[in-house]
Image (cartoon, rainbow over the protein chains, first blue to last red):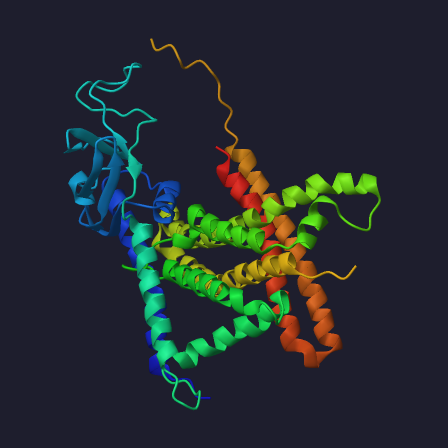
Length: 362
Length: 78
């Protein structure tokens, strides 16, 4: 097979440029004379935010403001996050309906009139109480990214579903999605849940697989609108694990509960010994699903960002070939890891559901 | 003179870093064992190579997950 030089060159340029989104922000803090703080930069990229930060241009942050929706004591308050003017340390106060709000580390608090009792802040700055926050239903960066991935999924699978001509042969995007759907059905759903019942759960398993995979991929793409770290947010993975837990509990049959609380086939002292362990096991399995996905995705992002930060920590441009090489290598591994993590989440969900519904012959 | 600041708080961050390193050792050992067993099985039965490779990758993700539990705990330490 002959190597196509043009395509190879194009791919190399694309890969080496794909980190520009991270690079520009760091330069700004260098010029303003601060030490480059790796932890802060990484945490900023990995966490949620009320605006979609694209880059910094000449010391000025360019970002897309997102709506802030708060449920306060006086009702619903909405405004755009541009009212805070990129402020994250509680200095800018937004006033709506007679209430003042400040934003500190991407959390919105009520601003109080008087300074703290310990008196370390000046009286002109409205300070916050740690506990007083309105309920925050804003469309943040991650919520926006979730809506985007939902829209993409609906588009992709809407087109796939319609792309079948009357022979059952797919055309268009269904040529890509059909092997995946068949793979989930034949390798994940049927072996774990069984022929009789798998159809009830197949939509859930397919949704979980493609939703997690698409969100992971979107976290890997470094430019707007895709660069949010949604599946590295523990609330998101926690909710998916919770749904799996609820489904497992609802479809469980009597044998399942019997095996947990009164394990048949062992002597009575063992039964009593095993019951608390099995009880903990009911909860630990979804928790491990949650942490596994969260930690894998977040760790991948942190590693990629840290390798790029090597250039800025060493403050030398000669580190960049090695750093970019490692970053590209890690990113390639991440592409594999995101698919595997989506598959493992789906497979373990199918396994838990299947084992809850299993008919035992004793 | 402010009153509150005479407590000495120990920072557990260095221990957290050591813990993460130990987790990496654990992951390395686990992945090495899986890789070794997979290599041996593939050498015995080259026609099963595809299935063995995919199973190895899936088992690898489980081992990584356990190591990452430890990393999450070390991230939480302040």
